[in-house]
Image (cartoon, rainbow, N blue to C red; front, side, top):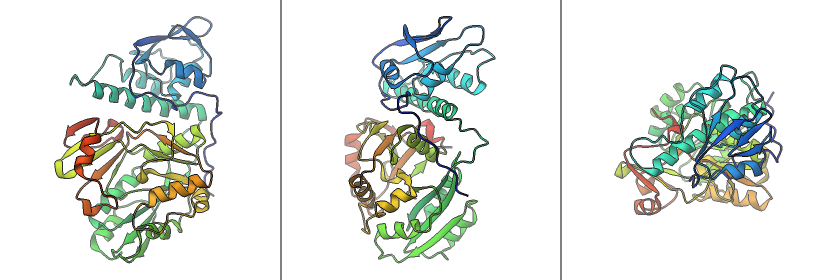
Length: 378
């Protein structure tokens, strides 16, 4: 029996929506008064709402001052669920050990020693992502005993040498059940690299073969027609995904109530230059008509209602989003820290952008492969 999709959260509770990458304000305290919690000097409800979270967004973070004896901590976990950066070097024994570990893992004054403010801001955002995962799951009651939803991952590939790594990343996804729908585009299933990749994958993989002349969108639709999961997720064979990529998308759909979710396209690895760039002109945790094409996740029935991918050689992600939006679907864009797009030679992509374009729009540049720590690259 298919798993039941996660129910959306009540709309008034604080969520990561509206998170600010840059903190203009100072650090403040989150303290217990004996009757309730004070955040930056103002009373905080037991279940913080969006307005209370918005007031705290400009702060660099909140230092938690725990009382000696046990008290209700709904306000603390509520702010964690909203992604408000929280810190406590030490927490009492009565605090959940995982929450205590997360609170001690980052401090507002810390940086990576490079003196780069942008990297310091990135570490703060990574901490926010880890906190919100914990807080949201605590709020939703999505414990380990619950059967996670099934995601049908749809991937088209004409590059057999990339399949092993791509399938390995899909198999490594946590907190979800996954099936893979692989559309081989002009590559036979008997190809040795294809066979090797399939032998090394522990997940169920359904393979669909298509001629090289078949439009890209049609290949994806052929694969998607075999899906049996609660959700469909688009996956690109040449990109990198963190192990909680799909779980983060499902969380974003739950707290936003969106029909379609995806991430911002932030990190790019420019293979010919052996450089990583980050662009931050696309905000995250917002409603938007655009998400990175390789990160689209939506319910299977929403995909069918939108007519699937347009049967075109390129522009299929934008085409699906446009059709779904025209049909009334709402699109939400969550953080892009667990996703890196690979930019190699132009002929290997269905989109055409020069390396100079990525350098021009980059907020940060690093030598080598330098993803966010959320990617958990080894």
